[in-house]
View 1 (tube, one colour):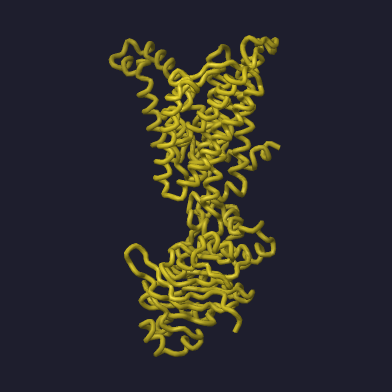
View 2 (cartoon, chains in turn brown, red):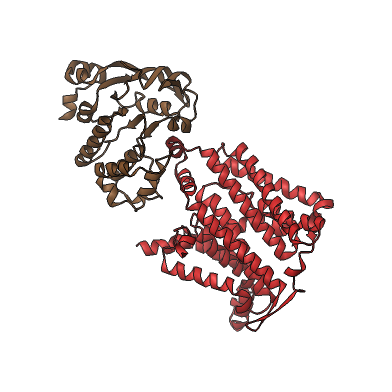
Length: 242
Length: 352
């Protein structure tokens, strides 16, 4: 196996007086989709934010693409090639869809081929290209948030619950776009509560509980083993899909 | 051509376009349209305060940075011209050296304040700028041997820019150096305003707006927020200093009250908020309305008071001495009815 794109070793993160991450060990293989799963409040979002640097790690190490980025600034991590799509989307409401997309490219103008691909993956963005992003619907904002992270080629994408609260039609649009991104060879660390999306996209999975990774392995292994799902997450994927 | 000059940032409202055109025509033809010294002085002040308010809008409206040091930068530019003209003699070289050194001093100070305090929360940055601006105002009034203290400095500017220089007559108006001085102020203000418009519509301006909305997201995309905020502070300070230099060239006098006082800071803040933050054109509308109200409200009220002399109570309410109260009421009402500023409201009307 080639070097992983990302590895976390014993990562501890505090938020105010709360000790949220309590020694996270995680490996994200290059060119694969790794699902980060677990019940609510176990530290999945904090893990992503710690990787991005929004929450500084108290101890432990974050290695990305062969370098230790534990003490790098947020912008330096982004410029090193990490794209982050937060749960709250974080679009710039006063700017147009086009301006949001252009801002997603820090190393140059938006590549026309990439723009065509993103507009074919998310046609609604083309329709509202010159509209203010604040006027988009919730699903369109989520599409814009993901498309902006993909506006230029990043080595690793951290995506936090992209399908949360979306209508089924938009969920399938989102899943298709992520599948295309995966087919292009991108490495993705994805937090996702929608098990059908997780099962369809994930190559490997890590399950968190109480601020630690308690299990990791192939997504197919987790998807097929109902007992394992119930033991790790307190519910089965099939049950959740019903 | 015009759209290119406006950097593609069109007014996006017919009423706003009309208002801006009226202001532009009145300012461009002020020496020929209006008679007397006072209207020309008002027009020059409007030009200078449009520029000053626009430079503050770059910081407040586009960068989301609340600073109370803007008059300090304005004062640095004004004192730069005053000191250079005092020590180098009356000449364009003194004006140039004074303006450039004032702008340079403003940039250096803005850079220091920015690097030391833009990392902290917005409210602390505002407090730090307030402290530095107060310290500079105190220093200027204490160093009277250099700055003239509370009395300020009076100096000579090139004769070609004064009323003593009679150039000739055009369209029935006598052209003097004062008119040339006005066009120097008008031309420089216009060019610098268009430059600010270019800046806010450049990729730099877009990043600045993104930072204003969500600084962490901008950082997480890969933009160095501190660098952008500091650059915006420096650019804004440089333009404010140049506006100060124009004010000093126009007035031929600088003093703490005319260039460094906290009242001017509040005036600029009101101009930007009333006009509409983050629009640039808001600075034009806000500054024009504010200076006109400041200059003519008292006269207007005098006339209204006389006209209503037969009524009870009304003449007292409209007494010219109460102009500041009415100015305050007008501003409270405008902020209440136009929370996004006049420009914001006009654009919303068009959108709806």
